[in-house]
Image (cartoon, rainbow over the protein chains, first blue to last red):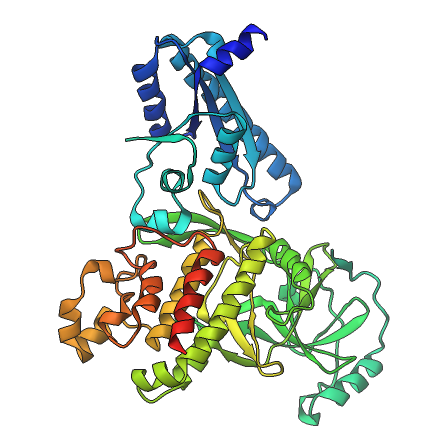
Length: 158
Length: 328
């Protein structure tokens, strides 16, 4: 058995789902302050970009350019947040990043699918302060995670 | 998916006039007729002919937006026409792509009117009696132009309001049948969702009861909204509005209650109102106490007091079928 596998088996694995809002930054800061420097934890930072359907673009070129820009933006953000965790005391090799672009029916389902694939024990999200109307019309990731998550904890950071 | 309109047959003016005479009364036959290029809908007028897929269409009026006081707003890109080969009325819908901002209160969201989306859905629903039917051709400018079958029939709104002499009469004698038809219509939206598509503009005037089949058909799928955490929740909102409308025998609002039933209005709390339209009542059991609790619970998922919302048609239908079963 190699070293990485041993570490993986022992470490508690957190999945931190982020987007480009301040709410995600709060979630990162919380994890950094709460767990930074403690052994036995690793984290994967996940960003899922909801790709608008082709209907929202006049041309295919416009759509491809949008995806490219968004990828660059979110990869930059993921890396910055990764550095925050490392600076808080997480080991360099224990903070991974993952960017997924797709047209998911439900973002929370997609997050939970990654959680399941990576055997994460905890999902962390920042709480968006939405109005009830907005939550009703467009959904709420944190609410859906709380209702749908199985075999893992969900931290919703205020 | 689209067929090309470029392969057009040549029709002489006399041939076209002869065909027109077959389908329209003499006083409506123009003295001259012109075949217009399909590239620009503004250039296509009443009494013109456009040829698509080899079929000549005799153009009649522009269609109009028929709700919210916009009766006079013409949709220049949507024209009624007569298929000169069959005499059938068609709706020609030119490509009109627009991006705009939707607003509900302070909430702002990105919307688009997309001919591509409608063309995709027309393909998915081909042959189904629960959706409008049509084909997509490329116009002379290479944009998707949809040719839709004209549906003769009333909207769900008109049908709802035509039943009954009082709410009680309506609810016990007509509503169970209407609810059953609504369940079928919601299942149709479930079919779209299962195919990864949203309707995008679910409204009670976008559901027509086809006189020919006696079944409801969803129409107008070209709107799309930029979804966020849940792709279909805005469609669910539309279904909820229709359900509350048919259950209330129209919209029950704070204003109508203030006039007709101020006592009931005084018993309502903010939690009893529609979660989006705060002037409409969702908790209809407080207005009509004979509405069963199981049914009212479904309505309350669309109220300001709701803590849990329907994320899919399956969830809504499971509750609604149970409630519907108890009505009979």
